[in-house]
Length: 409
Image (cartoon, rainbow, N blue to C red; front, side, top):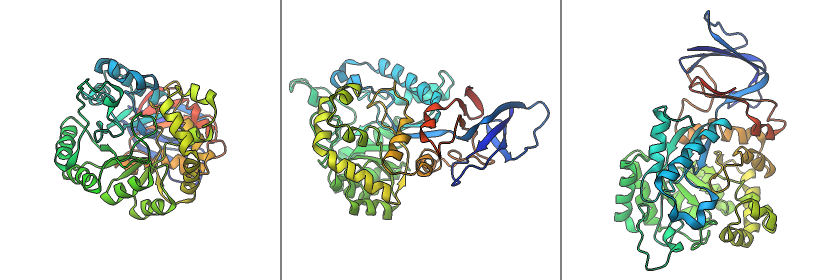
């Protein structure tokens, strides 16, 4: 129940530089002391990480635990049970890679509520995995980004629980999501890159419909995340009052300034978006990403805007929160590659690391997470190097503790 960690150096999730060598005292899953030498009670377990940097457990604010690239063309053939197994496996992978907290950003079971059930299984200790924040389904207009019926023949009258048009139907669907455990509400404010029947510049909902989503969620004290690409969709969603912009990869400089002025968080998911733009003309790259023909066509069409937006974001002062969009790409890839992509696009290592710790916790309204300080939950990881000098060491997390329990050592 009591542990002392000897750290080669400590970064608390906020400071501009690591503190240097120190010790961390953990009691009953809570950090109770951090100093050069803590006063540990007799019999405390000692963990020697004196050759590593210790920092807060990472937070992935945008993952899809029940989705895989190979599901895009066979979406309807996978059962809820199979998707639950995928979710359990995903959360274990996240945890082993140092992500002690994950926000799922769209349940791929558009008939049931699989992410809710996976969350319960982790909380009840039935399976090991990251702490899970559930955003329910991606609420979408018919013919919008998450209307999967576009892959079927017109005479297939399949029902999805996430489709809603008009303020009244939107109210009902938002309330249904909350009834079945959604801690955030997410909606498709624009089209997307990976789906067949929409374009990323399309605006998915009217201003009135977006305001209905935010107002209904707010009644139940739920924050709202919006899937967004095109400039006009981002502008409307920010004005409607969303808390987080997901992707936002085609927003103009003026709309980026609006995001900054309103204090809205942005989760850029650059590994799957900006990296795809950089390698847009490489068939070998698309083969490695599952060869999604819809995405390849649309990325190639919009690649210049995607690359320009990444440069503009790096120059802004927007509050960036870390998100990978993994599930859209393979879980065989460590989601920590997002750090390297962010830095390659001009975001400083400090800003990228804060995005996955203190800023992510602020966005998710989880003050007990994201930093190392007395009174905080003991979510800690360690890496064999200095990410401020070489950000790719984040892909080699070799110690993971969640709430005081060691899962990887």
